[in-house]
Image 1 (tube, each protein chain N blue to C red):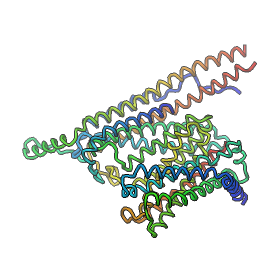
Image 2: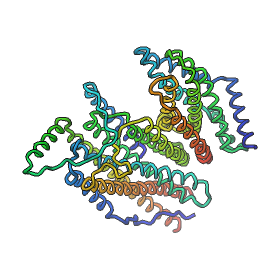
Image 3: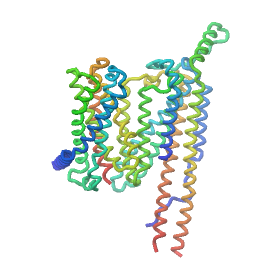
Image 4: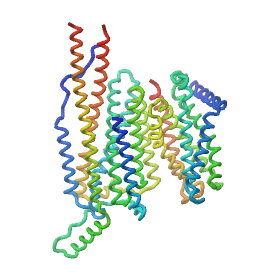
Length: 246
Length: 120
Length: 226
């Protein structure tokens, strides 16, 4: 069997990508601090909103991506001839999970920092806060399980199982905590929302777009990373095979 | 990465504990006000320079805002936290990737040498 | 019918083992009893306060004790290296899973029959007769959901390293909807709080049970088979 190693030139399309995304992020920062008007009742702190909600969206996309890719992995794993695709799904799942946890942490840190001046408390047992906290716990568990299993294959399977259960579980937690009651600012209600048209909306759209694109780029980076880790492991295996041969 | 996730979780727990600890005295003086069920974000009106009454009202509004909360520190802390987290994650991934690329190249060189020896 | 028969045989085996050793049930009941007593001490500011937190005490106790049961669902098989053989039984992994879920459910219900009256006695609550139905229904639906999730994760995490970290990290968030609904319904049954309609919460619990009754066996079969 000839070892299939990747070509020497590390494939680097889109080298300009980080610069473009960085420019987008800087532009949205400028909009957040200099273009968006000061909010009437909350004052300057309301500016946290733009990145807080954008991060929450990115985290949500990450968790959904992780659950769907894990589902694909569990399906493809048992199908003959789809081993490569299964590995792709697994790498995608863990990359989505990592980025989701990252943005979840950002939401959990910026949330209390906004709640303190706005509601005069760092933490209230409020539905969406609780939902994000529990979801982050669940997916931290996913990452731990995947990293600390006895064998790689077992870790991948167990973690994928957690993520697949986690998808509907997060939905159910959402339903339960909403029924339980709470008072988060319902800015994005789906019916136009309470965000003033004009600079506020432009700023929010810009931050949402630039942060989600950056999140996507991070997922891609993590994907490349996991692929390279697997390739390095494979290379060590082929090397030791060759060295053992007489 | 899992080590990163673990330490991130621990750091989060620590931050939360610290925040809650800091919130303790504040909570003792006054119960948190009930936040409204729905919120509409509206920009504060900028009064025309010649409308003296509106100017006064706007000053008054700004003053009460200032008295009520001095939120700018929290705002700064939030954005600094966002950028530190994102940058650390990004740079850590990039550095690890660079190390792995170097390792891979070395492995490939060893492999090529070995196959050459076997052939020759 | 061989799958059902296989499931029944596995269930009978587990119940027989339990009848002869009484290992799991004794652990669960005693542990639950201790937790209730400790909670009663910890919240004993006055009688009213204890009664107000009684639903919470009850459900947290049940989840903790249930966790003891689910973490040892496959212990016998694992200790004797019989997991692979068990998965290869005629019914397949789904039958194994269902048998284990029913086993856990039986343990949970037996434990609840002992613990719930004792808890009510300790915290000094007399259950109004019209509340008995709601409480029983909530306990049953909650136990079904917990057995479904707990058995799956108990099986998955039985071998994993860092089990002690992972179980709370992963199991508790997933069962939070059951916990919230259970506490609300128990409060209603005790005649506390506003006279809400319990139907919404019961519907949510039924939804939880149905979703995971469909999903969990599939995940079990996909994850536990190499």
